[in-house]
Length: 139
Image (cartoon, rainbow, N blue to C red; front, side, top):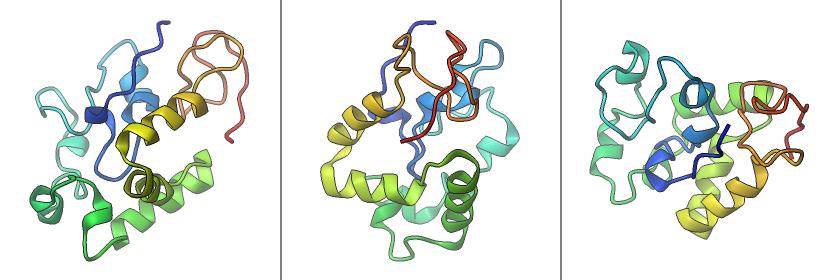
């Protein structure tokens, strides 16, 4: 599996790095990322409350950290689920994007989510690398 580059367009408004999502990495019915067009996306993704938030649409950065309600109830719920199940925080990601800038955030993500065994991008939703099956642990 080739390691796809992490691009700014693939960092969702909520702080999710779409390039490490199983829906983006799978071979069939691949998602193209939250910030891209909605054609062929599941209804769940098309109707995402966070992605479609009016405050996001009006913001300069297009990230939740700019919102007066940051972090809102829905983002807190999403963050809690990801911290519990996948050891990754959307809110921490957004705070890093705000503090470091998106380019530095992406460089950190590339280091964090690269398999130390084969160099492929790790899927956050799986416990083993999709390429070499090596188990990984979140930093």
